[in-house]
Amino acid sequence: MAEDVADYVGDLRRLALEADERTIKRAYAKALKVIRPDEDPAGFQQLHEAYQRALAQCARRQEQRDGADVVVQFGPEIHVAASPDTGTIDAAAQPHAAVAPRLQPIDLALPPQPDPRDAVSAMLREGAHAVPAWFPAWLRTHSSDWSFDTRDAVAVHLLQVLRGGEVVMCESNVLAMYGLLGWNDIASGLDAGELRWLAERTHRAWLQLPAQHDGLAIMMAGFSPDRPSSRQVAARLADLQVPRPHLRNLWNALRPQRVRAVAALMSALGCQPGVPLPRGIDSGQATFWAGQAQDWSRLQLQGWLFRASVASVLLVGIAFWVMWLDGYTFLREQSLLASVLLAAAIVLLPPLLVLGYFGHHALYAWQLAPESMPSPRPRLRAAGVPVLVGVLLLVAATYPLFIEWAPLYMLGMWLLTWQVLRIAQVRYYVRRTVRPPESSGALFLMVLGTALFVPAVVAALAYWALDLRRARAMRWWHT
Image (cartoon, rainbow, N blue to C red; front, top):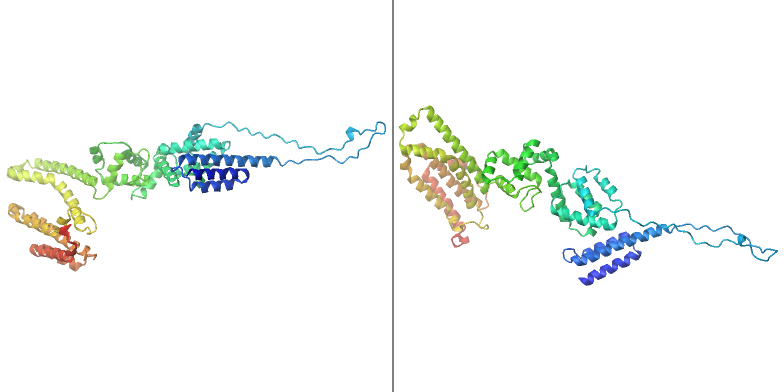
């Protein structure tokens, strides 16, 4: 590696004596393919210094070449004669000899150079609020007197500031600074992917400014059916920026519309898994709201259980209000056990409905997963349909305990039987890579089968037996 650095540095020194700027840049770009700054920082520093010296020497040669184009004028031809008196030649009559041209000295003194930190601060301050149409012209005006060394120092300090993540600027102005410093050229030696990511991060931070809330609302409308106002955008930004307790977040997520609005805002800001968050966004808040928007996630289950708990409290309040209007006559007519069961049913009904809904989805996903995918408890999954039929029979055996609630009990048994049959049927067809039948005749037969408890159970066991017989070579019970 050291020999390669010496060779490329020598090539740049030789090109500096006679080659033009374009040839020097091509040689430098060729050398960067071999000498990378992340692999050999010392060698890259030597190569970069040789490249800068070669450009400076090329510029000096060009200036000298331009200054040497001076026209030399000789005097007219004069015939010289000797004086008849003295026999000497008159000095005033001597012909004009070729006189060396008088070159005007070139003032190579550089104008006063700004401090790199001050120059970067001015660029960032102006670029944060400048219109993208005229910001490049401002950059060219304020950098016209920079030397090569000043430009390099500004580039180094600007890169450090951008990597620090404290810059707030639109992407167009950031790209204008890239063009000024030559970062869009391969000869710069910088990673194009990193530069693109830095520009996107500064743009996301710029979108959070109050002046950009209208534009951010338009972007959110592309991810949500409703377009929020500027005030709503500011409120949703506060949900992502201000750290809050988990219970407070659950209360804020009580309305599903708010969850959808925050999810649209996160999509507009580019908050994605595996990508660093924009400046000002709290990681805990982003994790909570992303989980609320993700279907069937644990955080979404917590949100729905919290809504169900609030609904239970409201139902209990309504029940006591109705009984208060009746003078609590209903409670006095019921036994203590019936009163307790009724209160428990009112309190637990909404959470149980939520748990049943999420459990139903988890059961379907577990039973319908292909064999190639790892799943928890594969042996129990293989015997899933018989286990469900056994649970169904145990529930049917409790019928004498609920004889007073026979209509509701039979309705619940009908729903459970239909679900067991549906799981067995869909599992059989999906694992055969065949679409399950959805015709009216199949639905009619399914409803008729579930209305008759025993035929439905027999059909479920038949589906399971056929599935087990077909896939016996997989030996699920040995996994």
